Structure formats: C-alpha cells, structure tokens
Image (cartoon, one colour):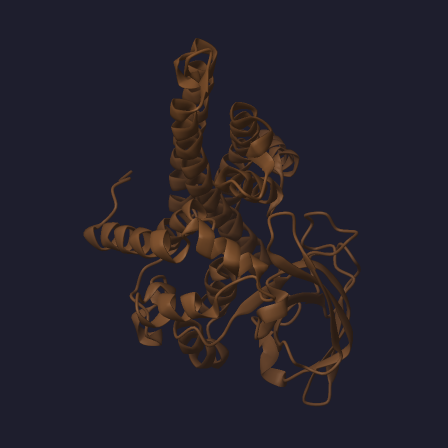
Length: 381
C-alpha cells in the first residue's frame, strides 16, 4: 500500500500550511474568536478562490480537481495544525460528499457553489436521545404538496449560525431505530419554520440547537432515494470520522511541538525542564501518539472505498485509538505547561480544548470500540 503523497498533494499541503500560518497567527485567531461570527469569512473565500482548496476532492466535471478522500485528509490535517475555524468538514467532506455520492441534478447545481465558497453546509444529524446511533431519529419529514415538511429537533449542529444550508437526516417512514425509512434532505437555512438556539462550544466554535416546526423544503431537497438513505449516512459518518482523525493528528502534532518548545525554555532548579528525564520520557510518549495517529489516519482514509464492514472497522480502529491518544497527549501537554496550559492566553490551551472536542466528534472511543467488537462478533458468527 502506497503511503506517499503525490506531487500535487504535497504542493497542496505546503501551500495551505504557509497560508494558514499567516491567516491563523495566534493574535489574528484571538481576534476572530472575539468577533460575533467567531471566524473571518474572508479566509473561507480565499481558500475557495485564491488557493482552490475547496475544489480539491471534487470531480473535474463539477469544476474540482478530481481528488478524493486523501486530498481531504491532507487539508484536514493542516486545518487541525492551525486549529482553523473553517467549515471544511461539514461543507466539503460531508455535504459535498453526500451530493457526489447520490449524484443527480441537485449535486450538479450546488457543488460549484461549494467550490466557489458561496455555499456553507451544516450537518444536522445528532439528536439528544440517540448518542451516536444515526438511525435513531425522531425528526420527521413528510410529503407536503410539491415538497417536504420537517418537524423535530437536532442537537449540536456545528457551524449552523453561518450556514446557508442544513443537511438533515429525518424519517420519512418506519419507527425510531428502524433501518428503513431514513432519508436525507438539504434544506436552505432560511427556510420558514426553522428556529436556532446558538451557543459556543468548549473550543470557542459556534453551534446551534435546531428546531423544525413544519419547516418547508422543495421537492429537490431529497438526496438519494426516499427511505433508503441509511447506507449513505453511514458512509458519510465514516468519512467524517476519518477526516476528524486527520484533524486530530494535525492538532496533536502542533501541540507536541508547542510543548517541546516550552520544555526547552522553562527553567527550574537552574536548567530547562526538558532536561529532566521524566519530562523527556513524557515528550517521547507524546511523539509516539502523534505518529500512531498519523499512521492510523492514513490507513483509515485509504480504506474508505472498501465495502461497508471493512470500511467501518478500519475507521473505528483509527478513531478509537486516536481518541485515547488525543486525551493522553492533551493532558500531558497541560501537565508539562502547568496551570497556564488551559488558559486562553496561551496557544496550547486552545489546542487542548480543540482536542477535547475532537475526541468525541463522530463517535468517542467507547462507541468505536463497541463497533469493533460487533464486527469481530459478526465475523465469528
């Protein structure tokens, strides 16, 4: 299996890293987080028009560069390294991925808008009672004249306050946990009947609780076949989990670098604390977690095209291990920094908080270990 990046992918990584190093300078990022929208919309447009980043994984017929999951992995790792507040995951990986996988005129009309940066998608899949069970849905969609009417609630919709569209999972039939009857709809964020309650997550990003009260969507809002969207949702979930692994790997690598620099500068008993053997051992353990995270992310990403059982198992193996590794590395960084390691005045504190969010995004370690156990049991049977 080839783990080497192509020349184009290497250029993509280097170009994006240079741009984000300037755009997400610590002081600039602090200013963004102090603004009402918690981001700089100009950066998103620059990623689209100046760097062409948003088109990297899309087919050339849509105006993209014909890449795929590996290109998104490269981008997500660099976004994680900069702890960038950009909606690449919900918009490009999930929303754009859903449109490409389903095919049809809706994707043909909207993917160019994603590539240009004009369309931003928030993924409304989680519900309070469901944990990570994407088939456990109480949100309902019913035929309403020439379109659809949605009723229900969605929790922790990241980026909803500035999204132009919501990608919503809903039931068009069946009972709460049934595989049949699950549908996927792309709904304009300004559709009548949608109410938002906005709030900040622990890492300073914006999220919302969404309430749909007979919210209206057009006939073309349906993505894929009505009532048969669960396999598509499962693939999107795995793609999102793998992309989250890539982001975590980039975040972990940068936090390790910051901690190593701090250990070289902070003195105690007349010498840098990095010379103490116990600190050296901890820094090596942190480095090993970074390297494992990178390797597992590569493996999971390269297996996204396999049949569903193999894909899900590879993703869960990566996400479960990286979630544990992210917690260890983040806590170790705080221990070496001391109390300042969780303050907003130090970059390390922001990286720690972001890792805390990534640890449970699209399934925590317990959930993914459970999926692995189920897969092993199914094989044994």
